[in-house]
Structures are given as structure tokens and as C-alpha cells.
Length: 456
Image 1 (tube, helix red, strand yellow):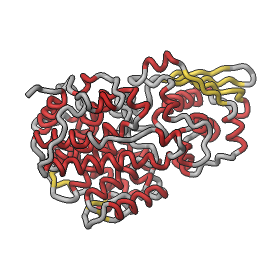
Image 2 (cartoon, rainbow, N blue to C red; image 1 turned 180 degrees about the horizontal axis):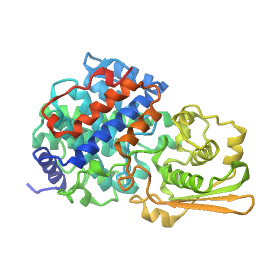
Image 3 (cartoon, one colour; image 1 turned 90 degrees about the vertical axis):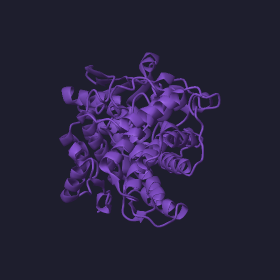
């Protein structure tokens, strides 16, 4: 039988489980877990979280021991579904430049839901999460920008990543792992049309369904169902049918390099990741020039065109649209000196001061910036003052990218800022739990994602 790139990827996942993990990857995994819990806690009290918990209880009914953000225990499938959706509500879960998706929600959600169902070692859970990142990001990179313009890759490539994480957590064989990924690929879906039709509230369902489909695919493979072998590269695979135009070599190249987990971005701002470089550039201008808002004549933002395909809201009409509006986030940052969770949850969209400043924000695109996408996300912000002074900043990479990462203490501070309802005791417990994954001596211990990690 002909060897296909997908087979090489499966063999790579098996090999990863059999070799020691280097310390940087262990440390990065602890950071990814802290980021995932931060996102989940931040979204716990939102109306969407209540709806997701209710939807999971009704549609995926059954008893279980898997904790859910906000409280309660559900079946692993229901918990994986709900937690993936809740952790995506705030738009602060991790991202990736080249794959253009959110890997943590599809890799971590199923692994921890399954770990609550049956005793799994920390090393098994580690391998599952690493596999989920590896697959989701490699498939997302291969599908490329044309795919990401029409499809939410967290839902498409993410479903295959969720299947890989689930299959490794369940201890499936190499053949079963391949089948699981092939089965999940047939369930890959997630249209960006929801943005065009003002249905932003449903975006959290994309990772939720991806995790549900990935977990079901792993169980189906365990039960003996076969999956497509060439689920990406085949004549009727994901690449051909879902607008793939990225490098197919991403599926199985550089297998001896650092795990893809190390290439993810932890988000610095509570909004769509497409808008980070203009926010970083604005922050740079604020820090170096301290422009006084009443004296600002205009703000000109130049950005790569793809950003506005996802985050092209001209002005929000509801809170769910605020994270996808460039004029809103830049104007808010300039006016208030910060951009926080409350600005996404309860935006004052009729504020006269905010509207007056937003009217002075001009947004244009630059095709030369697009040529650098997705490896870079170029944006230039120019603030012109009424006295003629001009301040400009260009950012090509984002705070939190691998080239400009947060450290452990900064991530803890970020957690407290994004999840202010968390007590000191809860924060310390959660931080210690995540940090345990960075210590190889804990590999043989049982992973216990207890309910106290998910709710007060």
C-alpha cells in the first residue's frame, strides 16, 4: 500500500509518545494549560456559557465525572463539547499564525474530559495534548489562507486535531489513530458565513462541535470503524474540497523539529487575533508619545486584507461583534488606556467620546502586507495630532507570538486580569496543577482534573 503523508504524520505521533520530552516543550505545555483554564474561567459567567452547558446536558445526556467550566459534572463527550465552546467565548484562547486556528480548545478539551473518565497518567495526557496541537496545526498550515478565508479552521482542521488528542488519550493503536483522524475529517465543517450574517454568538459552537466530532471519531475507530487514509491529500480529501492552498509538506515535514505546540501564540488582547498587530502598534505609540485624545486629528490603520474578512465589523451593534471591530478596539484602547474583558462584555457603544474618536479612525488595507500573511500579520498605525505632529508604529508580529512570548509570571498576571472572579487560593491551586506538567518526575502520576479547577 502506498505511503501517504497522513501515514507519516500518524507514525510521527506514535514516535512522539515513545521519546523523552524536552524541557521547553514541557514548559510550553504548562503554559498552554494555564491559557486554556484562563479562557474557560473568563467565559464562565457569560450567557453563552450557560447556553453551552444546557445544550451539552440536553443533547449529550448521560452521567459522568468530567468537570465543566462554571460547575457540574457531565459525560466526557458533553464536557468536552461544553468546555471547548466556553473556552472560546472570550476570544482569548491561543492562536496560530500559519494555521489560522485556535489549537488549545480542540487539543486540551477532549484530553482532560477523558482523563476525568478513567485514570490516565500525566504523560498520557501530555502526549494526547501534544498530538492534538501537532495535528490541528499541521493540517491547518497545509490547508492555508484560501481555506481560512471561507472556513473557520478551528472547526475543520480542529476536528482532526481533536480526534488525534482523543485517540492518544484512549491509547489507540497506530492504525486506529489513523482511522480516527480520517473519520473526523469527514465531519470537518465551520463556515465563516456566520460573520457575514451577524451570527457571531455561534462561533463558539465551532470548537465545541469539532471536539464532539473528534471524540466520536476516536470512539468509532476504537469500535472498529475505518476512516479515510488520505483524508487531507486525497482526490476528495480536505485539501481538494475545502479550498486548500497551503504547503502540503506541512503534514509530514520537519518531523524531527520542535513540536508544533511551541509555535502557538498566547493572546495579549481579549479580541480577535487578526487585530493584535494594530493594537500592539497603538500601544507602542501610547507608550512612547503619550498622545492626548482630544488633540488627535486622525488615526490611520493599515492592515493586511485577510484581517477584515474575519474581523471586518464596521461598528458593533452588540457585544458579540465588539471583538471583531478594529475601529472599536483601537478607539477604546486610546480612550481608556487599556482594553479589558469588560470592554468586550459590556461595551458602551453609544459613548459620545468613543464614537467621536472612532470616527477619526480610518482603516485601509495594503496588498504588500497580505503577501507576508500568514507568517506575519503586518499593520501600521499612524496617529496625527491637530498641531501636525505624527506618530507611527509598524508591527509585523504579535505580543505573545513565539518570538515575543509571555513568561510564567506574566501568564499568571494575565490570568488574574482576564478572570478577575478567581480567588487567590483558586489561582494558586490552578497554577500549581498546570505547572506539574512541566516536571518529568510527575509523568507517572494520575492526572486528576477535579471540579475545583473549573469553578468556584
